Amino acid sequence: MAEVVVIGAGLSGVAAVIALRRAGVDDIVVLEKSGRLGGTWRDNTYPGCGCDVPSMLYEYSFAPNPWSRCFAGRSEILDYIETTAATHEVDRVIRYNAEVLTARWDPAVHRWHLETTSGTYSARAVIVATGPWHRPRLPDLPGLDAFTGTAFHSARWNHDADLTGRRVAVVGTGASTVQFLPEIQPKAAHVDVFQSTPQWVLPKPDYPLSPGLHRFLRSYPAARRALRGMHHWTQEAIGLPLRHPRLLRPLEAAARLHLRASVPDRTLRHALTPAYRFGGRRLITSSTYYPALTRPNVRLRPTRVTAVEGSHVIGADGTRTRADVIVLATGYHIGDIPLADRLYGTDGTTLARTWADNRRAYLGTSVSGYPNLFLLIGPNLLTGTTAVPTVVEAQLRYITSALTRLRSSGCAALDVRPEAEEAHQQALHGALRTTVYNTGGGSGYYFGVPGVNTFCWPWSTGSLVKRLHAFAPDAYTWTPPASALPHPRTVNGRRLV
Image 1 (cartoon, rainbow, N blue to C red):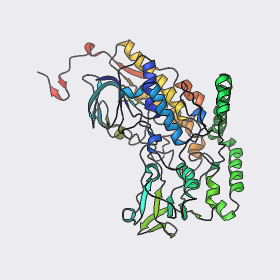
Image 2: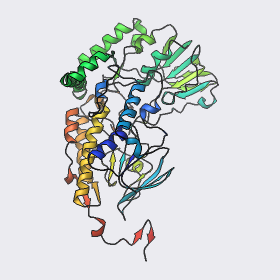
Image 3: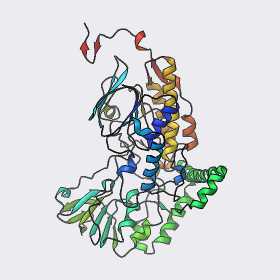
Image 4: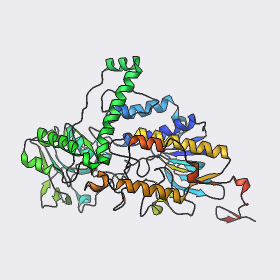
């Protein structure tokens, strides 16, 4: 029994425990399917893995960190999450190796019942903190199972596979490839990079942050706030044209200049030039990706992969490339909450089924028909420029306000009204229509449901924080306490006599 169960012990789950305790909620259990916390930063171990927003924005507001670089690497981020968790004794409430099998809302007792690989739990409220960069997307490639070499997804990097002197085929050119290609290129004998769609790439202003700088920033907190503010407003300046595409030309010009300066070969430049608007797909920054593509042992294959035959990777243009190792850099099921087919709402329907036509949530946090359930990084809460911790902390202020209100009201449950959810959806998708996310001509990443953008928040970061600042009780239906309800005739499907 617990007042709140948090599912997932990554960046969001750790923040949830700390926020709940600060709000006076101490009866917490965290269910983590792995044997270690860290989430995305635990699972993704590919070479060069790191943050694509400035480090000072990728931290909890209550735990500033002396980052070693402007853009931190994966190991440093994982250390930061683990250190913060240890400092706040989050470990005490984590149940490791406890994968959630089902979570069902029981209307008779107004609680969630969760079946896990380590036992059964009951909770008044559930916070889902599983994150969007969780489940690798594996392509359906005929012949891949019979590949004579080694094949793995970049999100599950096989560190036993030595790439030294090997022929490597990389399938996909998203954010992961941009980070790991410069790391593996010097080791491999040859790398073929299969690109179905080119990316817009801006230079990455990465640089070391010296211990002396951090000593100065500790002595003058206002200076650190100013530096963090500079990073924030730089991100917001990039985000503004994404919402107003008529302002995109300077960003597109900067990206083209970066491409021209990095890639002397005109044919290669042409193959790397996108046909859609800047921001139509996920934003990518790198100062090392383009140079890696120009190395003598790297060849760009501007075609999608259609099959694998023996030791050869087959492109849609008929290209046959021999490979010893295949790295599938084909992304994640971004719009899917991994537990969507295991969460059962008031009518016994799974969240996956509820979301079959459109993944929706009120302020990306509450879903009608799923009382006392809250999603962290739910649908339509991210942009290409907003740091995840900013979104998570804003959501947690909203969620803890909701739980505090639920406690003080004496009610048993709250459930967002369908009309409030629908009104939010109408406003959100109306605003998205004119953004580059919807009009830029990109595909896939933002559209979790065909034709429906389920990823992007169409307004500014400031607007997001403001909307989530104050809990909106009128948007919810409130269930009276159990003592005020008619006595149930059945419990868990069994008739009472």
